Image (cartoon, rainbow, N blue to C red; front, top):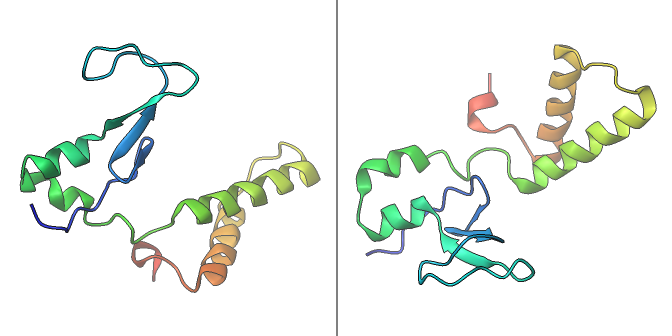
Amino acid sequence: MNNNFVPCEQNGCSGGWIKVFSGQTEGGRLVDENTGAAKPCQCLLDYRAGNVSLRPAYSRFGKGYNDRDMLWLYHRLTLRKKLVGNQPLTKADYESLLDELDARRGGPPEWRQS
């Protein structure tokens, strides 16, 4: 196994691990609801098994918006909601927010470049 593991970082995945607060561990023990437990994400299991057929699915990870970008966007949307209420955003509103985010992060991700 080489050191090229790239976690998917989706659905709660953090570094190939997912935090759970219910159910059972792989060893059959009950998960403590207060402390939780970590279970391996499917991306880590695929990597450990040497299943490279799924690796192209992860090729875009880390090349788009990240968690800090999404948090910034969430705060901007929350602020907007406080100012104008529940008025729906138009396509121009979304584009304006993404343009502002792109300027803040030093440029758009590859898929958003025109």
